[in-house]
Image 1 (cartoon, rainbow, N blue to C red):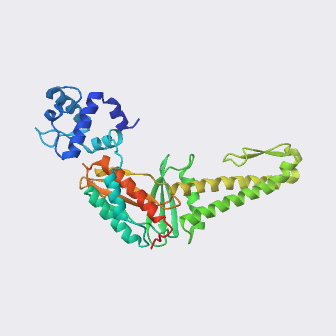
Image 2 (tube, rainbow, N blue to C red; image 1 turned 90 degrees about the horizontal axis):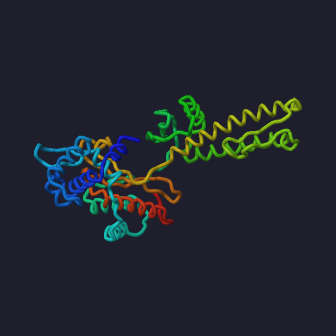
Amino acid sequence: MDDKNQILSELNDRSREVFRRVVEGYLETGDPVGSRTLTRQLTEKLSAATIRNVMQDLEYMGLLGSPHVSAGRVPTQLGLRMFVDGFMEVSELHVRDRQALEATLGPTEPDVGSLLDRVGSALSGLTHGASLVLAPKQEAPIRHIEFVSLAPDRALVVLVLADGQVENRVFTPPPGQTPSSMREAANFLNALAEGRTLTELRREMAAEIAARRQEIDSLAAALVESGLAQWADRGQPDERLIVRGQSNLLDGEKDLDRIRVLFDDLERKRDIADFLDLTEEGEGVRIFIGSENKLFSLSGSAVVVSPYMNAERKIIGAVGVIGPTRLNYGRIVPIVDYTAQLVGRLLSGPAQRVK
């Protein structure tokens, strides 16, 4: 159980309601929320003194803060994160917001730059925050690829592209990988990568795997037909060829050695293909609060961002909103999510061309 889940489990119903009311009041007004205000709002009738005790407990847990000695409380960054993850109710996209987005973006058009300009204006107008729009990226050939182990379950892939850009992506590596196996994977891919995009590299790996699979099948066919060997878990990642009566196979030892080498090679290429697949994974709407996003950590800002995809369900860009940490998250999340879906559909239309 992580720290946030542990804190959440320690809150009783009274503490949860006080915490939720404080955060909602702060997000609505931007002002600290005091105990007297809460006495009029809580479901359970409590005295101001009792509420102050609950708020002190929440402050001790790091969820609330007091900007002035005698003032009410405001949520801390941890408190806002707890609220967003565990308490926030995301509303349905309001009909007015949906209509405004669709009217602003209008019909499809070939000029993607103009479309994304209007996306930014629409998001700013609806949310009263600064918009964030990342244009579709053109997939450049890879100059160099590197895998770096960060932890047993976390790794970093560094892609140096031919146009000079450098992309860093964190991913969860396939089980059992070591720093040395990652170096071997990078060395193998760098030998193939020259002049190829990531998509082309993945296609090349699929062809390599198919070729190894065919070569193994050809060498093993005679052994299987003669009844000297049989397949186990054929076609699965842990497939193997079970050989019987090895004393009768003296003439076939070279083939067996070759099959073993090919199996090792096939397993290694499957691992490398997994690496390539994992580097392309993406997530849905993300909310970054305060220092969780290093670009905006000094300004007390929050970022709500969602990727948009093309017709092949590949992430090609992102849209979002930047604002103060007291954003109306429940309303803004569905707006950003719908905008990303709308942009993805428009860019995937038959008339669209990415310029």
